[in-house]
Image (cartoon, rainbow, N blue to C red; front, top):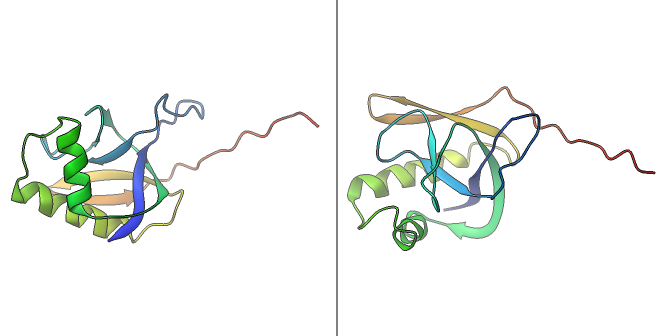
Length: 123
């Protein structure tokens, strides 16, 4: 479906997360947050990155089962992840994204945050 995916992004004085983790919409609580596919940790922002591999809902679900985030596949999980992967195509790589749930449906929104690159002062 797509070669783009969201990676967790923290904007605490330009610090990155300690561990780079891919994130998906919160499929359990339907809150305005993302969850990590390895740790189930909540994140408010994500940054679009290029994975180099074509991702589909089966691949993502398999990773969630492998990491014991979910026990088995459910149709609503597949539908949510399919919509998520389709929506990611509308954004450019390095866009910072937030999520908003309205009536159990989510919408990805481009954030106003800008990624700052700190330049090294070495010659």
